[in-house]
Image (tube, rainbow, N blue to C red; front, side, top):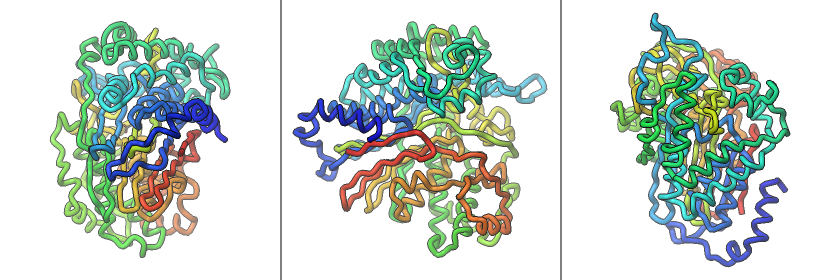
Length: 565
Ligand code: GLY
């Protein structure tokens, strides 16, 4: 029995009346689900979600508790200093909504703020320190979710996170890896260094990490709601800390932050309804566009190398459009209908040759690039009423900007790096872009995060993963696997490969291609690069319509945990 399951067994013992006597609420088709399922990247986050369901909360309550707990137990991946996307399905009404709590550029941000006098990028300026941080959205998102969709009070939803911040959590291998990666950056933030590098060395696996300032910040959020973070003491501490270290945030920037509810991207491809992230993420558009392109081919009839070649070619084309056309929809006009249209995809597909790779330089685009690494986190939930949440949360790369404003315990994001700082210059994920994703005050930076629902006569899948630009290829491969009949454990375990238009290389995990398939792909003209280590941390929950079975699976590459009961 895992720690999470033990925790839940204790909850069961305490709450027999609630769980065994209370009739489950009806799903939209009149039937309650026999089970609920949760998959997250950390056992304590899964336990926090369970605690809320056991206390009579719904999937949205669980999502708030999970998101806040992840901020404490995975401080390298997401948190109160970052942003979040939550894709919701309300069983009662059938309504689906995308809650956009993405960071925004501060009011004093300018397109050239990361360039020197000669117009060249200042190395590291978008990645480290408070100038790299957008105005956080996650705290506002937690309040919004709880108020509008939850049943339990915010204090109850944030209690597990506060408890773990106060009492401490065991340092995980993921935390240590990130600390090793950010050690030199940490020197410029004494608060961050003191908490995570006591005595100048990174915390070791198994040590206890206590975060009392973060607990106090969470308590102020409970007491004041939106104002408990974006105005008053927390806002003052954040702005003072940022400005005294070279950042440009103002109190007005924080007070002006707004969560936006958006229509998700929705499309039916080959009998499967895909519901996913709209702009300011490229995730949903790229997913639907690649599936549309693939629908013109008889995939099952192809050998594995040609199938992989085809997947690479559709990714190349979708990422080219990402680079050329996408940005914050509140600032730029995006041809969403065209990009989602099967006819447009059919036109793109005619340029794909099954006997040869298309060089990316042969497709008009904004330029060149280099390498990148992932951080972020994802969780999936289905409750017994049939409500669903796919949540992807981020402070961008490991430990975000590696900067903690004194007195807050909040690690700031370095999400400004997701903007295009100069056309043709690659960001931390080696992505390029155009003015559509240029910096402007109050603008959201383009994301690749893709919290997704798949719906078909077979049932439902709730999925997503961290991984920067690779999120899109991971979600595509898992979607194809589900369409081909895979169950949740196979979806998360699937070996991965990725292409993003520029750089013109196929990154692949060990085991993704046989030797023969590697040779075949090279013969077609692909440049292959083995990834140094496995990547992604996918969390999936599925519901099977015929059997009523709910299944949850956490990526074997990560230290996550699931529950189904
Ligand atoms: N920061 C990664 C993303 O939003 O795509």
